[in-house]
Length: 251
Length: 250
Image (cartoon, rainbow over all chains, first blue to last red; front, side, top):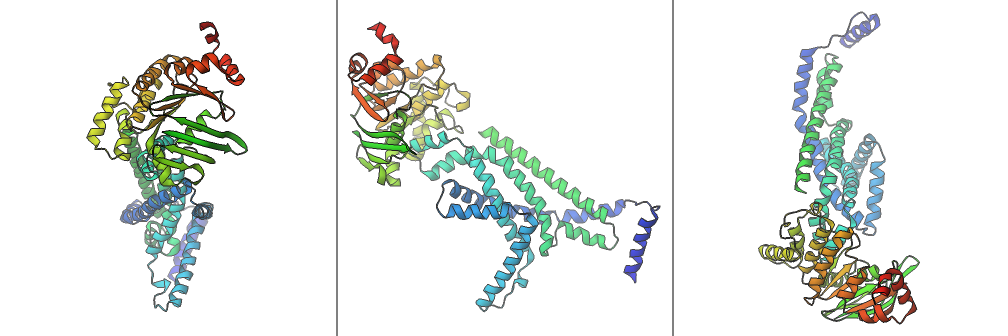
């Protein structure tokens, strides 16, 4: 009954067109505050995969450049699969394959635990990390390969080992190139975290939306969320700029 | 001392080296001449394994390597007994002149950092760059960069220094300073193999001149023998083309 009534009220308002939508500033501020409390979660959801992406992305990029047989092909396929698919699909496919795979394995091993017992946030970290590694590998490979061949030859000619060449010559020279590219990837990841609601994580969007369910003030809620994403992205961009200046000043 | 035996190398279907035999004595300065595309640079790059030869043997001091079966360890060994001065300098862009020179000793030879830096300063002073220790390569002229490159090679005390057209990328007015430095170190009895197009320099600095064409050594001998009294028709033609002034000087 209550639902019917509110539904009717909303319908009436749009039907008559006379009743102008009044932006509810106090509710907006309230939602903004709710949104602020979700910033740490959003940052965690983007930064943990980012760190994984940096570490494993560098590793995979080096394996790609060194053309390690078999592995090189596997990595290529992995990147091809994950980079040429909408992120929503990636998240859903990974989620369901994980769930089914987990249950099958658990059953085979006669374990009591089931996929339903795994907190969705853990899954979100894993899935976003897999996606992030795929994106980062290609960015990092591009940056590493921007270092001139002559630099590597010179390092070989003085007898440096490959590991030392990466550590002392290639990576320091690739950094100024890599930082802006990786920064963009990071921003993309941050925005991508919005999709984790699909696998049942209460994140910035869902958390704020829940509050709006009662009053139907969705516009206020969504703008509050947008403001937070704006602020986050501006902050990240500034951070990258600072880092870029730092690295450029050093090299 | 340094021996190259039956070295062969192809890029695709193009055979660049067709069986090179060359031996260089300790302290000898060997200049390799030849038209472009004759395989001079490839020969140098195969000696220190920047290119892997298809066939042949390379002996440097106590290290003997079969190109076809070279292991990583052997290649590293060869690299550590040689040093190279590149046509395009290839100084490490992220390091200062002094750091460039000290990099090899510190990282490869595990020399104490202070000692390596001190020795690096001495070497830079010897090549006339005592005021450029802390300059990055981008702040140096081509001639200065190449002199740092030479100091970097010297810092390793290699058994041989390979010069790959060290002045070809320089503006004409900067060639002199680099050749001057090379002449100076040649007098110190350091073994060198030099690929160059500077004929009068070659005549000046070389103990032996090797003329290469189309992947083979056509002729070799003292500078006098090659420049004034070449036996082979191909050598004569090349010299005639590249140094007309010699016909007048004689």
